[in-house]
Each structure stands twice: as C-alpha cells, then as structure tokens.
Length: 193
Image 1: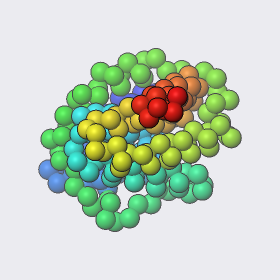
Image 2 (image 1 turned 30 degrees about the horizontal axis):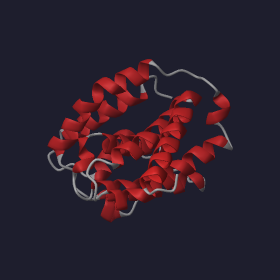
Image 3 (image 1 turned 90 degrees about the vertical axis):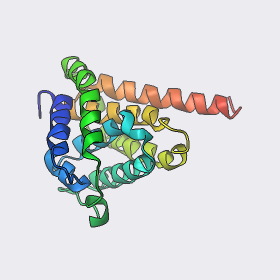
C-alpha cells in the first residue's frame, strides 16, 4: 500500500498530462491497471475537480467507475475496459489543471489518514463500499444537465475508495455520511421528506 495514495495519484495525473495525446488508457497505465480502488479514486477525483463541468465527462466517468467496481466485485485480478473507452482523449491542459487543483487537498487527506475501524474496510463491508462506488455514478448522466452537481456525489465515491485504499474506516463513514446527506437533500427538493 502506498503511504500517500492521493498525492501519488495526483503525481501520476501530472505525469500523464505531459503527453500531448493523453488518453484514458495512458492515464490508467500511469496509476496502475490492477488496482481497482485507486482507479475509482482517480476517476472520482477528476469529477470532484473542475473537470466535472466538461460536457460528457460525468457520463464517461460514471461508465468507467461502474465497469471498474463491477470487475472488483466479481473478483477479477486485472482491470479490463473496452478499447473505445481506453482510446478516448483527455485534454492534457485540463488534466494538469485538475492535478494542480487537487494537490493541496490530497496532501491534507494523506496526512490525516491512518488505520481506524478496520472492520469497515474488510469483507463483507469492503464489498458494500465497492458496490456503493458502482451504484452512485449511475445518477451522474442525469445530473450532467446541472453543471458541477456530480462533484458532490463524486466526493462520496472518493471518500469510500480512499477509505478502502488506506484501510481507514473513518473515510468510509464520511463517504456514507455524504451519501445520506445527498439523499436527504434530494428527498427534500422533491418534497418527499
């Protein structure tokens, strides 16, 4: 396990952004294709950043996270994604800007993680968190009509995946708290609560 998983992901984003023809596949290569939770964390961090405002990026990100989470849940050893997704271009200047924007929060979270409440990070709770990471993005294509709204849901996915990587149950709880808050807000907006 990496000592500073978020900082390492941001560094890998910056490295990938140096390629003028960066693709989803090359970014995944930089962050490690056999690591499901780090890939989910990376994609969700992109949606927390200003990149979530780019039309189409929430839908593409949702599709990627759903595919990755499903593979983790069925027990695959290595990540597989269709070539059409792997060849999708990523604007290098926006990826670099997102990495710069995420650097300070990443360092803060890395500095404040430790092994807490490990029961929340092992089976069957690990599967529940991974399933939540796969279900939450199913709403993103519909939320794409409202710019940057996916950032809130992506925060929950990022917290859950970060908790799984660092084995820190506090972040798992925070991820579920964000989900509960979003559900409560949605129920209130639609007059059901």
